[in-house]
Image (cartoon, rainbow, N blue to C red):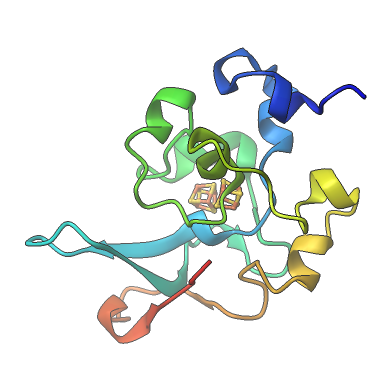
Length: 144
Ligand code: SF4
Ligand code: SF4
């Protein structure tokens, strides 16, 4: 049987459509994070980027995200090597580490809602950012 594209094609050789389809829509990468200056450890918060639609867990203006949010980062195969801030469940990170996609990934289930049903997205678990908010009060362990 033919292997699926994410197993048979390297990340660098994917089409843009294949690359985009790898995103499971969890929304975890779109949360504010803090990095400990001494240890370099990255801590997730439950505070979402202003542009994250917290219901769909998708960017509210994906096409213009870089123009509108200066610290939004374009994920690329090269960038992945430096992305210690991606969650352990992120499909890009998993494939870059030679690991399989989780069973709840939409590419395996054929259903974009499966990431939410599996409790692997930020839906219903995050708050919107505002300037008076102290991120250190909102650290979250998104284990797995
Ligand atoms: S963490 Fe990875 S899989 Fe989840 S939304 Fe971000 S890019 Fe997509
Ligand atoms: S601008 Fe959009 S893609 Fe970028 S971090 Fe914010 S919600 Fe995520």
